[in-house]
Image (cartoon, rainbow, N blue to C red; front, side, top):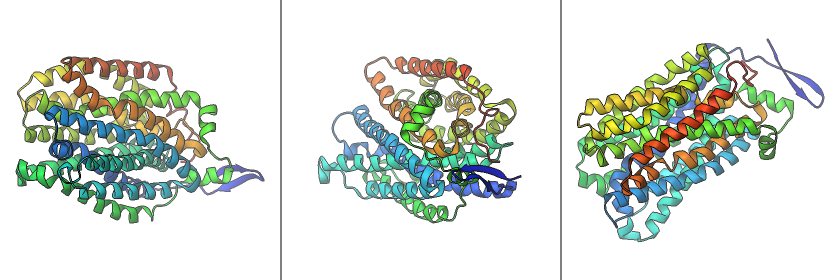
Length: 441
């Protein structure tokens, strides 16, 4: 069946996508390859910051050094809304493929800068300034990557299994973080702590830069989505003003869901690596192993819960994610902080991440289904990046701040409260599976 677009001259016949499952899989895997590399590079910073924190920030105790690297991590997030805005506009006008290629090229450059920058002992204050500049560049890249990849994969997924196929957007996101954790575990087994702190931490950034170059060429050969072709035939152009004027409710929904989703994700993955060492008392190697195992289970859960959303609907999944997430935050952090057992810590964190999976597995598709194609990439990217910067980017810093103030449990309450706000939003929104604005199959 043909799709129909509308232009100034009347209806325009557009070829039906008619994609087979294999063709969809090929497009989604091709589009997600760069997503994996982007997030590998992004999380390599957090994974290896326990070794290079004192290289760039030699003053203060370990917690103070961690807080400074966490502050740079948070400041990198501030660039993500700018990247999302610019790349969202670019993806809606030049195409999803062009935006995806540009974003991975920017990430490559940022990784190379970090890998090659001397420490504070050689450059003084210039060293952390260059580190910050590289993270800002990577923030621009990741900010653009999320909206473009979430939009592209949702558009290529097909109506019947859109939840399942689009869940691979988060699968590759987790694979990127898992790859960073894998490199961390391998290097911990092959190098001692002094070697890792002196020069070993630079290796993962070189790896990321090389992988980004490979993916850049892969993305140059991707097919464009039928939704983008339809929007171009229709002739309407998405703008920032149009997004906020015509879709204020949809924009607010994404901000609210992303606030809780990003906070929970970074709390149980990125920050948890330091929490296991700094609060629970595990060694760096033990914390890395637990983090690796929970990330692996988290990754495997995404397609299953994405598939479930195609049957139960997106709304039911969101209610479960944030309702249970609000209830679980306090006991999970409290019990992990008190246990000496790696198995118990793994089980508690894994339970929290399985709850989180009810959101993360459909994160891309819920956002994409809220907007028409001509403003979809911008609509997905900008409100997501704004909320992610405010709530996800500050999660680690706030957690460490609460700890330094002697009220670590305040962070647990904060996580539960934001989850509660997202639960209220989920209860009042429509089910995007039944009311999707992605017209093309």
